[in-house]
Amino acid sequence: MFPWAEISILIIRGALDVVFDVNFWIVLALVGYQYWQMQKSQHRMFGVYNYTLSQQILSAGAFGLIGGITGSFLLTLVGVTLNQLGLSYIWPVALALMLINMRFLCFAYAGGVVALANVLFGWPEVNVPQVLSLVAVLHVTESLLIAVSGGYSAMPMIIKRQDGRLVGAFSLQNFWPLPLVILAAVTVPSGSASGGTINMPAWWPLLNVSLETPPGTSLIYVMLPVVAALGYTDMAIASLPRQRRWQSALHLAGYSLLLLALALLSAKYVWLQAIAAILSPLGHEFLIQWDNRREMGAPPRFVPPPYGLMVLDTVVDTPAAKLLKPGDIMINLAGLPVNSRFDLAAAISQAPAAFSLVFERAGKVVHKDCKFKQGERRLGVILVPDGNESFYVEMVTNRYGLIDWLKDKFKR
Figure 1 (cartoon, rainbow, N blue to C red):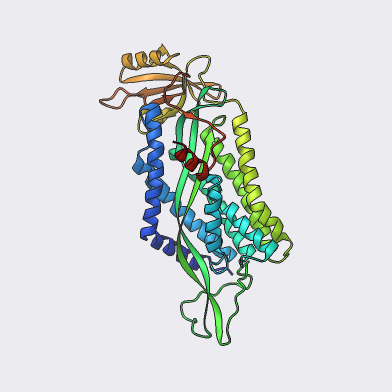
Figure 2 (cartoon, one colour):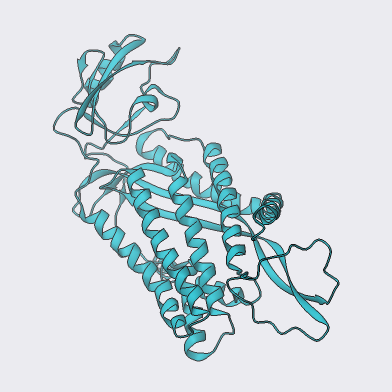
């Protein structure tokens, strides 16, 4: 029987140890910098931001810890080890691919290229099923984090579409520091590792490590702490942020589980290794292109309605945050109709401390009682753009990676 409790305790302890490692805090600081940049853009567009920087950093750290424990458990269950992953090959390939496009800084692309090179040319010396299983497990973990991470990562934005129209949207960006605990196979003198070891079932590991053991030695597995990071970038234009996240998470989970199944089977059926290696980058790229084409091609959701005022987002810890959601259409506040920003400002200024709010959600009219916070007269709502805003983000398709950035710098 698999020792679930003992392995879980070791992984949790190892992940918590990584949290106190200086490298984890360096990654967390980089995550905080990314959120700070996003927050500045939001403040320029709307004059407010919906979550504080400390809330975003703490949430990223907490979810990253959950993801690290989950990913470590899956890696241990499969039997992925550091010995034959070829990280010294994968990282340079990933950095090289980043020069073409920043989103290629992903193990799905670099791991697939390294694995395919091994299948075709026998170099570099890596264990292809192990490499592709690592890619698959990391993306399973990412799909879980995309699904469970809350709205703190959904940043309201004003974007200028290619047709020149300004519409409301959400930039869905997550960055997680990942405290991982990964197996490493080591040889020890036979009989010297009897104490403190955990007896594993005969079927484990699902992936064997092909290491030669000198006479008089035996192979054991140890757990080593590793600091990693995951990131998710998406845009919700035609969908609600939560719908977009769940769609992305579901599609990514399907791709990851298929890749994991092929990687495990390829350890027995060698001819599957080429198919799995090709699926790793091409399947990931197809997923991105397909999801983006569906989202960008659909009519934008966050545009001014025929009547009332549509909510793009709300500010945390305000009256609106307790009642309204993205896509709601405010119709009446304190008995006064609101069909423009001026109507809303006038209604807020005339409303008593406690007032009624009428809005439409999914075609149904909703009446709610609302009240201002003591000493404040602020509703805390971010509206969809009217179309004449000064600050916005322009959607372009001709920007790629570091190469284009350097070209722009040298042209100036």
